[in-house]
Length: 382
Image (cartoon, rainbow, N blue to C red; front, side):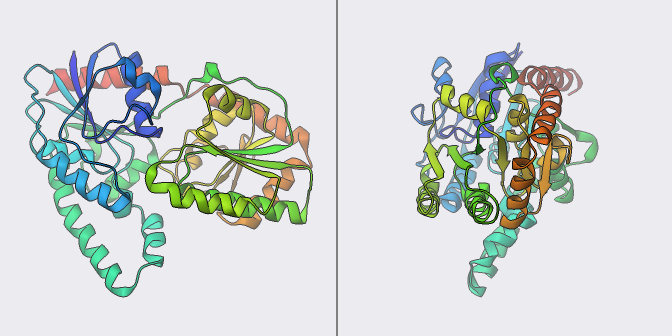
């Protein structure tokens, strides 16, 4: 089939971009990607192999302006669907507005999450903490306005695949679509690219730098761990930095500068990235109520245990006490978990071995096969 796939922006190295890229690489269907912003220099270089059709475009400026402006831009954008059998919309809370003017063909949604600022109570609580009373009331008013149009857009989906139970729960709690029109399709990873290596004395936190990824929590936890338990381990933080997160990245670097045992790396090449996974002692994951979180899967593929916050997607991918440890989002809890693994190498290796088995349940091959089955089913039913 010929499929038009819309993703609001392609400029970073996040989960949404990775999903789009894997569908382009492996789907048996003919996919054409449409977007309102594309920067080949800052996203995955493999995108250069494909034609990316850019609709009306805007610059990326901050989280709030980006969300508002691209929601409006999607709502007024028009894709000529005559030559396509199906429209797929990959969304994290903005792209669904493309459906206002583009719903003449069957539509499938791939939902990373409905807009977290409107549907994630943990993130909303965090945002409200720094606002005054007037700003809070305006923010709540803006969310009500957004949700009104969001529901209208979602009415045009024939079916929506969520990437986790966590994301699906936000969809259903928001009453965006009927339960019988939803499903779960977990993203995977290129398991064959990862290799178990040594257990060197460093903890590794691989993730794009952003306030909701909470690298600051990892730094605080590690400093507590060094002070209370150990002086031999190091901490390595590595990931990309989008323009809107530069201020946060600089803050994390400043926090890390108090210890020579904390190493911060930006835009690590694939070979080094895989090596850091392969030879770390354990992997950390601190993201705030993450939609799914591929890091625990990649940790397992590297035969390493993961210490993760006990919230969001990792509750689905981490078997607590078997493939890793799920702990409260507090520095002391992470510190204690680090010490538990550091003083018991046998336990770390055992968890790593179980993680390797678990990671084999998730692959991009299975994800794309599931996608292909779904689009064929929709095309035949609608």
